[in-house]
Amino acid sequence: MQVERILREYGHFLRPMSEAPRDGQRILGHSAQSGAQGGHLISCYWELRPQGLIGPNWVEERDSPIGYIDRYFDGWIRPREFRLLDSVAINRLLVAYIDDARAADNREALKMLEAGEG
Image (cartoon, rainbow, N blue to C red; front, side, top):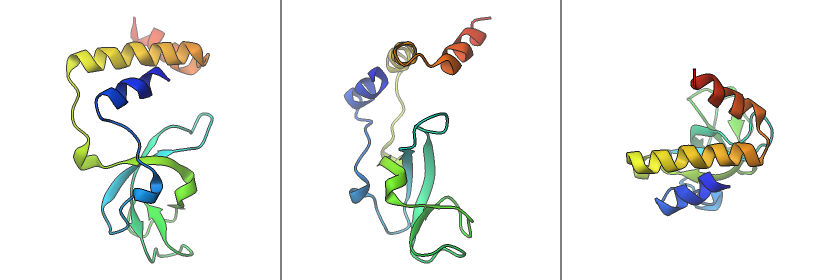
């Protein structure tokens, strides 16, 4: 994946879930799920006693009816360390995204890009 390679060059990479803070700090968890719902970031924090859930979970908000376990994510990013990228990096990422979409035959992504051309 070209996007991941470029992000890694700029210091943006997923850390293993075993290193995620379990002290209430928010993280951006990267979904490990495949398909249309996969590969997105979820802002969440570790809750020891989530209301309505069995056992500790990653939750998006207090009293959230949905929680996530470590296996749901393939890694995480600390939002405070997530730095803005310059225009050169953004352009490189856009080209990489298009290359990745073509390589994966991601018609939905390509259709969205084509719609933006008009």
